[in-house]
Amino acid sequence: MSERRHKRQIIKKKLFTKNRLVILNEDSFEEIFSLRLTLMNVFVVASIGAILIVITTTFIIAFTPLREFIPGYASDELKRNATQLALKSDSLSNSIKKNEAYLASIKKVLIGDLDHAKLSKDSIYAAETVDQSKEDKPSKAELQLRDQVAQEDKYNLFEKAQPKVSSVLFPPVKGSITERFDLRKKHFAVDIALPKDTPIKAVLNGSVIFADWTPSTGNVIIIRHNNGFLSVYKHAASLTKNQGDVVRTGEVVALAGSTGKESTGVHLHFELWKDGYAIDPTQFIEFE
Image (cartoon, rainbow, N blue to C red; front, side, top):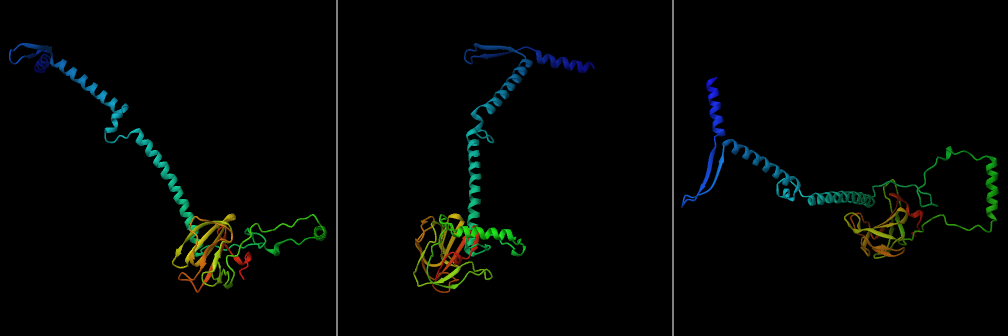
């Protein structure tokens, strides 16, 4: 125990023994500065200085722009730019998805990989099929009422005739039909034989959404019209309109030819689509 106590006393004496730090002029040995201190004072001052340095460095890193120069820290402007770029990339991604869906639908129109719509000739809109066998038969009172209304309408001088079709389709060409619309053969168009370079005209006002050459059907132009209509003109010798052009009813959009692998002579392969469904053009257009 006495040895441990003796060692403690030696250590305590060293820590608290006063020493003098003197700075002398090397030439004249004149005393310039002197300081009395102990090892304990040096340890305490060094510890406090280290703590202050750590606190100051932490403050600079956390609350000043100097932290931008430290690897791993990003500036506020960089964060704002990253957020804006993320929003723009998200909107661009949505736009790309919409364009891809739109192009996929156009591709289906080009290859004819769509369903057929059953239409009523008096209406442009698709009509649902009704099972006539399940309809209720009218009673005698209903039949009498129908006859009475028919007689009144027959001699009504003030009734004005109204067209039942909201759009009138202009014939793209006049010629002989060589192949008609046939669902069993998946031929969603009518083929009209024509002399070479016969002008092909737009059936309605609209805008050109596709005008280019395809390997199977040659020069093709697709026009989007109002009310969900698409008109497709294939195997043209040349096109007079480009994608994005606005056309009017009866305006020349192409010249007849026999381009493409599937061509069987100079003719027009004409398709008509409504809301994504193929319809028989002969229901609304007289080609001959």
